[in-house]
Length: 435
Image 1: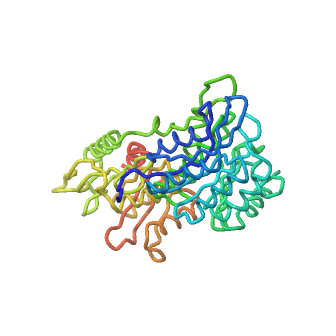
Image 2: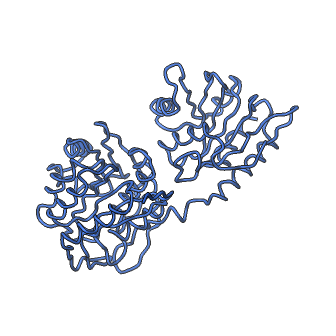
Image 3: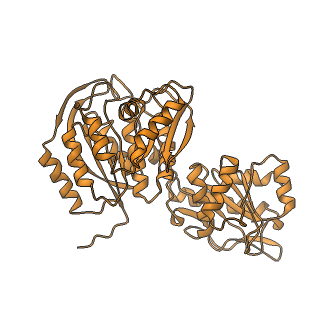
């Protein structure tokens, strides 16, 4: 029987946390927050709370194997992650079952609990290096785990990059989390395709119980939704920042990281459509007609978890000028502006919060005004690149971020100015400063 489902499915292979803040329990909630169904292979049962680990009971290897069988014989897995594996024997079994996997595998090399106490038997780190590093697409160690896996102490940036290279020398990517490092801001390191990229985030209050599990689950869910590894990591890191910022107390010890913050913060589809409609009305009422190109303009606004054009709202039929009057041809709908959708999707790869773009008619006068007003400006170089992805790559490499405005004067079909922002009102405020 062939099963066709719109719901993406991931697998978490980890331990059970009785307090519900980490492990399998956190993984299921975090994946569900990104619209991914989580299947589970439980490796061990723990008795723990927000301040102590009281007992760990690893499950029999035969039962772990049966869990794999029950899942893999019944459904298609789009991505998987490992968390607490506890013993070398369990690690070997997991690797054997995933040896010929065709989906992204993310390894969270859990060695200790956030509340203190070991979650590993002797030899686990060596087993992870031997059995799982050759199989995984990404490993997500914290400072202590990276030190154990690399064999070096991490005291500075040079040590961090060296640790990433040593861990990833077999071919896997590495995301070294900087939360436990003694720095003013949190600096993370992504080792991908033999290149190191640094990411800095404001240091929040102490990261609570379950942060590592939640982050790796976000990454896994984003991979299951079809995003590439770099995009999955960036989107997930933005989410975990919110999860830590909204962590909450349930007991006497550490706070618990909030794995479903996305559901709380993310606007509904109706909200997104409403905001586009409101923006279109404001455009029709206020925008000078000379900023509208002959074939019309549009505004696109993406859902926070946008995977493609179907998750992006725009005006059906565009906003046009007829006899000197601006009007919109249709209502706000999802999936009606494919080209503009790919522009914003590629912008979100670099800045997940930059979710809105509007296209305007290009003129050198308008471009000059924007530059005089202090907008951060970029330009698509269509003489060397053709794809939106490559064009956006070039702009971000030159500027270092997604700019306020990207000029596109060499497009054969339409010469455009694209204005970017976090939401439709953010974009309109920028545009309204020029007239």
